[in-house]
Amino acid sequence: MKIIFSGRVQGVGFRFFVQSTALKYQISGYVKNLFNGNVELVINDNSKNINAFLLEIRNGNGYSRVLKEERSSYLCNDSTFRIKHGGWFMLYMLKITGNDNVGIVARISTAISKKNANIYSAEQSVNKEIFKMKLFFSIDNENDLDGLLEELNIIEKEYNLVIDTFSEEEFADL
Image (tube, rainbow, N blue to C red):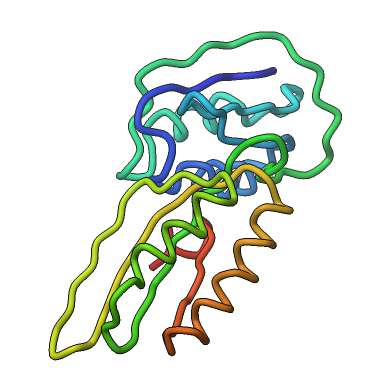
C-alpha cells in the first residue's frame, strides 16, 4: 500500500514519528519526503496492526498536521521499516559561531548556492563582536553535500569559525 500525506508533514519530524510508530506496531516499509512538500509512505499491508498504525499517524506528533491522504495499491516486500533518503532533498541546519567578520554571510550563502542547495531560512546576530547564525538549507545530491561540507571546512578555518552541521534527524531532536 502507498499513501501520500499532504499538509504540514515536512520539517516537523513527521518521518521520524512515522518510523517510531511503525516500529511500535511492527509495520514494515518506508517513508520519504517528496519534492512537492508531501510525504510518501509505503507499507506492507499484511499487518494486523495497520488500522491502529494509520490512526496514530493521522493524529500526528503534535507538530505535524495531515490534511489529506491518497491511497493506492503498491507491493511492498520490505521486512523492516526505514526512512528513505534517496531521490529527494535532505534538510540541514548550520549553526555558526565565531568572531564577527565582514563577508561571513556572503561566503557561506555563495558556497551553498554553488552546490545547488536552497536556503530556507537564516537568522543571525552579533553580540559583543560574537557572530551567531542558524541557517536551514536543503540539498538533493550527496556528492554536492560532500563538496559543500569540504567548502564549509575551508570557510571555518578562513574566518576562524565553528560551523556545526545537523541533519534533519539530528535537529528535529534539538
